[in-house]
Length: 232
Image 1: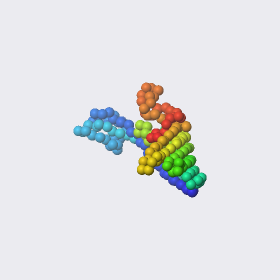
Image 2: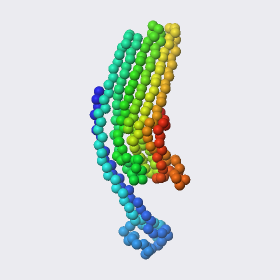
Image 3: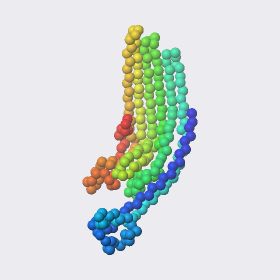
Image 4: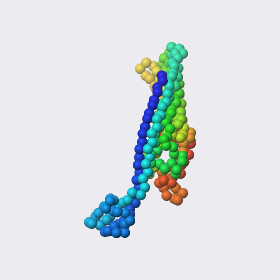
């Protein structure tokens, strides 16, 4: 089979930072260089609690499209009346996105827009009946490759995604059934799974910064190569 995917995304974000320009407790804006009558003022019993003035504004506007052909193929082979073999190849695609709110000058390893995730999987299976069909043995092997590999995380007030890495998942599944006598059956199952990150740099929001603080905007990226995939 063959599938064509096309995704188009637009994103807009405006961040405005405010500064308090009057001290708490002031009852008059006489020393305020701004015209407070045209600004937001919060009053508590006639006393100015805070008057705010926009000091800076950052606007991010991005648009991007992602397209991909994802084929799949496979075959079944009946080796004998009691044995069959199957092989399949498939691929997948998940569109990229934007790293809104991330200062790319402070985080040069963050890409916006980030790339689409692409997955390729190979699977082979063998099914057999043994000893005049008193026993069955089924074996399956699979290999999944993510390249690029997407990861999303929360850092402070930011939700950041990136796709600059690669990851692999592989495994073996074995199941068997044995019927020694009529009406009695023994069955079992074995599963082995190995997942790993081959390449990815990621910020650890719990890591200590050079100044000793934890998290925040000064977190340094960490190489996750060799780590197990989450939820695997």
